[in-house]
Image 1 (spheres, rainbow, N blue to C red):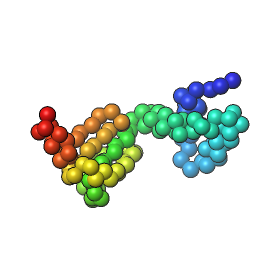
Image 2: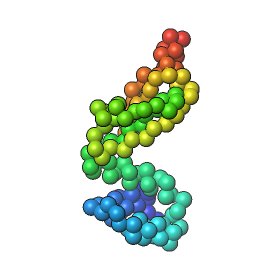
Image 3: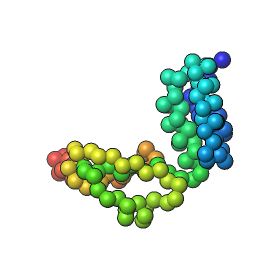
Length: 121
């Protein structure tokens, strides 16, 4: 029987609930994927599991995209709470400024590229 990526993700979240350092659950889950010949779904399953875990805990994933490496620690203190996942990306095309993406769907674009594009249209 084939399982969907969503079902696998729900099973993984359930197996990991309340466990912070248990590596056997993750290893067993990988063995299950191999046994079922579903390793090609692993990336999709992990993305879905991360989303489910964040929803369950009430946290969010924040992507800070800047043109070059900057110190975002002060910004993080005011905007991000404990348990949130913060990912920093370097995108030279932004020229300057910052683009903030929350949970993959809400976006605040304060980049120079965005402002230049608005002037052109």
